[in-house]
Image (tube, rainbow, N blue to C red):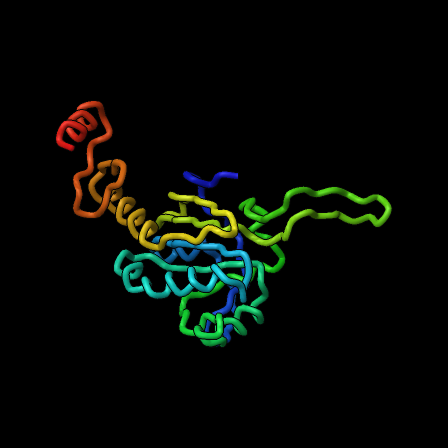
Length: 212
Protein backbone atom coordinates (compact mmCIF):
# COMPACT_ATOMS: atom_id res chain seq x y z
CA UNK A 1 0.00 0.00 0.00
CA UNK A 2 1.50 3.34 -1.05
CA UNK A 3 1.14 6.27 1.32
CA UNK A 4 2.95 8.95 -0.68
CA UNK A 5 0.76 12.03 -0.89
CA UNK A 6 -1.47 10.76 1.94
CA UNK A 7 -1.55 11.41 5.67
CA UNK A 8 0.56 9.03 7.72
CA UNK A 9 -1.65 6.59 9.70
CA UNK A 10 -2.98 8.03 12.97
CA UNK A 11 -1.82 5.14 15.18
CA UNK A 12 -0.02 5.34 18.53
CA UNK A 13 2.70 2.78 19.22
CA UNK A 14 4.74 1.87 22.31
CA UNK A 15 8.28 3.25 22.22
CA UNK A 16 11.49 3.07 24.23
CA UNK A 17 14.37 5.51 24.72
CA UNK A 18 17.94 5.16 25.97
CA UNK A 19 16.84 6.01 29.52
CA UNK A 20 14.57 2.97 29.73
CA UNK A 21 11.35 4.99 29.53
CA UNK A 22 8.35 3.39 27.82
CA UNK A 23 5.87 5.79 26.25
CA UNK A 24 3.46 6.14 23.32
CA UNK A 25 4.48 7.76 20.03
CA UNK A 26 2.07 8.84 17.32
CA UNK A 27 4.19 9.67 14.28
CA UNK A 28 1.48 11.82 12.71
CA UNK A 29 1.19 13.88 15.91
CA UNK A 30 4.97 14.22 16.17
CA UNK A 31 4.98 15.93 12.78
CA UNK A 32 1.85 18.06 13.05
CA UNK A 33 2.01 19.14 16.70
CA UNK A 34 5.72 19.91 16.64
CA UNK A 35 5.65 21.44 13.12
CA UNK A 36 8.61 19.28 12.16
CA UNK A 37 9.44 16.80 9.46
CA UNK A 38 9.77 13.18 10.61
CA UNK A 39 12.12 10.57 9.16
CA UNK A 40 10.79 7.18 10.29
CA UNK A 41 12.90 4.15 9.45
CA UNK A 42 11.96 0.53 10.08
CA UNK A 43 14.47 -2.28 10.44
CA UNK A 44 13.88 -6.06 10.76
CA UNK A 45 15.22 -7.06 14.19
CA UNK A 46 17.28 -5.96 17.18
CA UNK A 47 20.57 -7.81 17.82
CA UNK A 48 21.21 -8.47 14.14
CA UNK A 49 23.94 -7.41 11.72
CA UNK A 50 23.07 -4.72 9.18
CA UNK A 51 20.58 -3.09 11.58
CA UNK A 52 23.07 -1.67 14.12
CA UNK A 53 25.14 -0.11 11.34
CA UNK A 54 22.05 1.79 10.20
CA UNK A 55 21.00 2.90 13.69
CA UNK A 56 24.49 4.22 14.43
CA UNK A 57 24.63 5.96 11.03
CA UNK A 58 21.38 7.81 11.76
CA UNK A 59 22.69 8.74 15.22
CA UNK A 60 25.93 10.11 13.76
CA UNK A 61 23.88 12.36 11.46
CA UNK A 62 21.48 13.57 14.19
CA UNK A 63 22.87 17.12 14.18
CA UNK A 64 22.30 17.37 10.41
CA UNK A 65 18.69 16.21 10.77
CA UNK A 66 18.11 18.66 13.63
CA UNK A 67 19.43 21.52 11.45
CA UNK A 68 16.74 20.56 8.97
CA UNK A 69 13.93 20.63 11.57
CA UNK A 70 13.59 16.85 11.30
CA UNK A 71 12.85 14.24 13.98
CA UNK A 72 14.40 10.78 13.64
CA UNK A 73 12.40 7.75 14.82
CA UNK A 74 13.50 4.12 14.50
CA UNK A 75 11.08 1.20 14.54
CA UNK A 76 10.84 -2.58 14.56
CA UNK A 77 8.50 -5.28 15.86
CA UNK A 78 10.65 -6.02 18.90
CA UNK A 79 9.29 -5.30 22.39
CA UNK A 80 10.31 -2.25 24.46
CA UNK A 81 12.28 -4.55 26.77
CA UNK A 82 14.33 -5.96 23.88
CA UNK A 83 14.92 -2.42 22.60
CA UNK A 84 16.26 -1.37 25.99
CA UNK A 85 18.53 -4.43 26.21
CA UNK A 86 19.99 -3.50 22.81
CA UNK A 87 20.28 0.18 23.75
CA UNK A 88 22.21 -0.94 26.83
CA UNK A 89 24.66 -3.10 24.85
CA UNK A 90 28.01 -1.60 23.87
CA UNK A 91 28.67 -0.77 20.24
CA UNK A 92 31.74 -3.03 20.12
CA UNK A 93 29.51 -5.93 21.21
CA UNK A 94 26.94 -5.39 18.46
CA UNK A 95 24.74 -3.07 20.52
CA UNK A 96 23.39 0.42 19.94
CA UNK A 97 24.53 2.14 23.12
CA UNK A 98 24.62 5.87 22.42
CA UNK A 99 21.50 5.99 20.24
CA UNK A 100 19.29 8.79 21.59
CA UNK A 101 16.26 8.90 19.28
CA UNK A 102 13.15 6.86 20.21
CA UNK A 103 12.52 3.34 18.93
CA UNK A 104 8.97 2.23 18.19
CA UNK A 105 8.12 -1.22 19.56
CA UNK A 106 5.36 -2.36 17.20
CA UNK A 107 5.23 -5.85 18.72
CA UNK A 108 1.49 -6.20 17.99
CA UNK A 109 2.17 -5.18 14.36
CA UNK A 110 -0.71 -2.68 14.41
CA UNK A 111 1.18 0.00 12.46
CA UNK A 112 3.38 -2.21 10.29
CA UNK A 113 0.33 -4.18 9.09
CA UNK A 114 -1.42 -0.99 8.00
CA UNK A 115 1.75 0.14 6.22
CA UNK A 116 2.04 -3.25 4.49
CA UNK A 117 5.75 -3.67 5.22
CA UNK A 118 5.79 -7.08 6.95
CA UNK A 119 7.73 -9.99 5.47
CA UNK A 120 4.74 -12.29 4.96
CA UNK A 121 4.87 -14.36 1.79
CA UNK A 122 1.48 -16.02 2.34
CA UNK A 123 -1.40 -16.35 4.81
CA UNK A 124 -3.60 -19.47 4.98
CA UNK A 125 -6.43 -20.34 7.33
CA UNK A 126 -6.18 -23.82 8.88
CA UNK A 127 -9.71 -25.04 9.64
CA UNK A 128 -8.41 -27.96 11.67
CA UNK A 129 -6.62 -25.76 14.19
CA UNK A 130 -8.82 -22.68 13.63
CA UNK A 131 -5.68 -20.60 13.16
CA UNK A 132 -3.99 -18.41 10.60
CA UNK A 133 -0.76 -19.88 9.25
CA UNK A 134 1.86 -17.36 8.09
CA UNK A 135 4.79 -17.96 5.77
CA UNK A 136 7.65 -15.50 6.29
CA UNK A 137 9.37 -13.97 9.30
CA UNK A 138 6.53 -11.50 10.07
CA UNK A 139 9.07 -8.73 10.69
CA UNK A 140 9.44 -5.53 8.71
CA UNK A 141 11.51 -4.81 5.66
CA UNK A 142 13.80 -1.76 5.73
CA UNK A 143 11.01 0.74 5.09
CA UNK A 144 11.56 4.50 5.30
CA UNK A 145 9.04 7.35 5.43
CA UNK A 146 9.62 11.10 5.16
CA UNK A 147 6.63 12.94 6.60
CA UNK A 148 6.18 16.70 6.32
CA UNK A 149 4.94 19.22 8.89
CA UNK A 150 1.33 18.62 7.83
CA UNK A 151 1.61 14.87 8.37
CA UNK A 152 1.73 14.02 4.65
CA UNK A 153 4.08 11.30 3.43
CA UNK A 154 6.52 12.81 0.92
CA UNK A 155 8.76 9.76 0.46
CA UNK A 156 8.26 6.04 0.99
CA UNK A 157 10.93 3.45 0.25
CA UNK A 158 11.35 -0.25 1.05
CA UNK A 159 14.60 -2.24 0.94
CA UNK A 160 14.93 -5.99 1.27
CA UNK A 161 16.66 -7.27 4.41
CA UNK A 162 20.30 -7.38 3.19
CA UNK A 163 20.29 -3.87 1.68
CA UNK A 164 21.37 -1.14 4.10
CA UNK A 165 20.33 2.46 3.52
CA UNK A 166 22.40 5.55 2.71
CA UNK A 167 21.67 8.19 5.36
CA UNK A 168 23.05 10.96 3.14
CA UNK A 169 20.32 10.31 0.58
CA UNK A 170 17.65 11.08 3.18
CA UNK A 171 19.35 14.35 4.04
CA UNK A 172 19.33 15.17 0.32
CA UNK A 173 15.61 14.35 0.09
CA UNK A 174 14.85 16.57 3.08
CA UNK A 175 16.84 19.40 1.45
CA UNK A 176 14.88 18.90 -1.76
CA UNK A 177 11.55 18.95 0.07
CA UNK A 178 12.54 22.12 1.93
CA UNK A 179 13.53 23.76 -1.37
CA UNK A 180 10.17 22.87 -2.93
CA UNK A 181 8.35 24.21 0.13
CA UNK A 182 10.31 27.46 0.26
CA UNK A 183 10.91 28.27 -3.42
CA UNK A 184 8.04 26.55 -5.21
CA UNK A 185 10.53 25.06 -7.66
CA UNK A 186 10.99 21.37 -8.46
CA UNK A 187 14.27 19.47 -8.02
CA UNK A 188 15.72 17.59 -11.00
CA UNK A 189 17.78 14.40 -11.04
CA UNK A 190 20.82 14.37 -8.73
CA UNK A 191 19.84 17.74 -7.24
CA UNK A 192 21.72 18.79 -4.10
CA UNK A 193 21.34 21.83 -1.87
CA UNK A 194 22.86 24.87 -3.59
CA UNK A 195 22.39 23.54 -7.11
CA UNK A 196 19.94 24.90 -9.67
CA UNK A 197 16.33 23.77 -9.49
CA UNK A 198 13.69 24.57 -12.07
CA UNK A 199 10.11 25.72 -12.60
CA UNK A 200 7.55 23.03 -13.33
CA UNK A 201 6.77 24.03 -16.89
CA UNK A 202 8.15 23.46 -20.40
CA UNK A 203 10.32 26.56 -20.39
CA UNK A 204 11.77 25.65 -17.01
CA UNK A 205 12.75 22.18 -18.20
CA UNK A 206 14.17 23.56 -21.47
CA UNK A 207 16.24 26.21 -19.68
CA UNK A 208 17.57 23.69 -17.18
CA UNK A 209 18.53 21.10 -19.80
CA UNK A 210 20.12 23.74 -21.99
CA UNK A 211 22.35 24.93 -19.17
CA UNK A 212 23.38 21.46 -17.97
